[in-house]
Image (cartoon, rainbow, N blue to C red):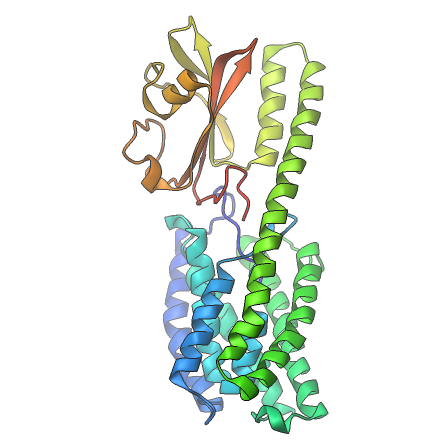
Length: 382
């Protein structure tokens, strides 16, 4: 599934709507579990240990997204279809809820966006129930791999297609309704998600077949190459992102050389910087008389403001250290910077990026960016 992205508070629901979502979740979640159990309790093929292994593997896969056009995708569909075909709808619902929780937990959503937990839980509950019901309505049954027929594979494909289509329609509709923003159904994310489902389907069927032949070892035979491929793609994406950002930096530099006024240069720089790194807070400090830094631009929550900082001395605090060393500093999460002098960083923030501004081979200022969500790398990849 496409993973929700953090960054900024422009897409945050009002408190009343958030409360409604939580109340709805407390009602829908137990009813959904009960319904799934009534429709299809765990099959006689179910084994506690094997399901735990599948769940553990799913959590690992969910934590390694494939990033396409800055949209992270969780590639767990091959495991969910295996669990559905092998253990039934109830087991698939449990697994889908665990995966949803793991994916959102990985994003470390800020407090005001934690309603995404119940919202996504409700939507994936509906997706699981409806697609599972379609499988059973058309005569689908849970069989051993040795009894595979063309009809079974077709119905499994119908289940996977239903899962994908209902997922996309529901998420697009919910987004448009809740955020009052029209969102097209057919997007690049839609096409990539469709491609991932097409690839995941034969992998899931293969795992279903191998499981009856070699048991738990099938998870290693199928899972190891997939996880390795995900790691390679993640590394490749990181390198590709670096090249893209460097190209953008060169283009920004060319535009800056065409501007003569300080204000225009600064505004152009910030505009391009926020396009590349959509931070929640951004500050630019300028060297004043070689003894202190002064904030010349302050950007918070989508708008420019005027803000005063205490005098920043060289070598003191996060900003002062970067000013003194001339080396950039990146703190992935709050645990890494909470014991350092961090004036200006709100408590709900996670990642911090501080970069020296070099002029005439000397540090003439500091760029200070803060993000609400944890960024695995300075470029925010993943």
